[in-house]
Image (cartoon, rainbow, N blue to C red; front, side, top):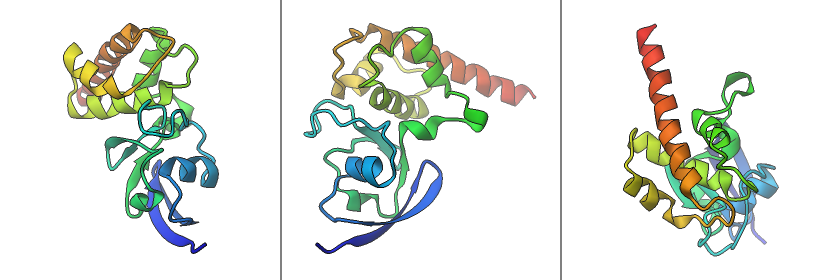
Length: 166
């Protein structure tokens, strides 16, 4: 097996890795970098549990070749942690409204939520539904996800306003 060297930024940290070119991004993150917050569900790109942000866009990392990470910026659920370990406003909102349930799908849903809120600070319910349509959840019934995104949108706006006012 011929290994290939790739360089990328994962959660703000530059990484150089020697990987099997047949490895998926999910396996690279979980096995090579021990970032186990990225879950593996269906391994067919259907459930969304493995969603990470690749150059700001949500992708199903179980079907993305790890070689696509070369030169990329990747964010996993572990990368949302702020200074001193504080939670991201999206994570706070998910906890506050009970949108975490078993937690298996939660990392992927949160990262899709982040991509949506980065692009659309105050999304409509239809926009939320569209963004989260690639995620399967057996626990929440999805309504909590909508509530969490609405709350997260408000939290992010409040923090942005506080920074501007300072």
